[in-house]
Image (cartoon, rainbow, N blue to C red):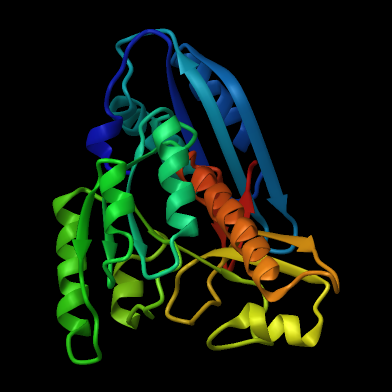
Length: 294
């Protein structure tokens, strides 16, 4: 998250602290002691000790009664604790919304779901613009009062298009990029530049049903479960750390169209949960896996 959006402070302000570090005795004691010294009151605390890797994960949401403390000063003060325990930590205003850029192609169900949830305040995000390689989604974005950028992509123009995308990310202070059924593969360089900042959604038929019309292929095979996977984007196509998955049961009575509709529903739900958890700082990376404090 942009540090400029997380520097406010007032009586009763809430903050979130996330920690990843080697496991050792005294970590929880050190964190809670720090909060006591800074007039902090813990609202929510979750932790996980991965015995296989010897790594410790923690998320603490706390309230500060003294207005002298801001996210910025708390970060500076906590640095000593972090150094002692070799912590990778983040600390910011719990209510600060993530600046989110949504990318989409021709299928609009995930975008529609995100825009609706955003409009109702169900997601802790701001969406300054939608970017697409098609024009299909422009009326939908405009209906929600969100700027729309048409960014066509061909093999010849892909480097220039991705350079423009990075300019938009910088210009709008984007914290998170969501691929809401964006059907272009991001280059390795772009994946590295936006590492841990891009979430993708796809059906869970991979690798069984690749290419066009996967739900039609699944219908021909008589599948009984369909689902979706939300994950962070890496240079390895569709193999980034998984954030959330879900499935629903179908049967022989489902037509192709009903199967597609059911798939759209589960895709939208899985993606919205992943975006919500990310924006609330509930996801910590553990190698190629994720720890999700729901």
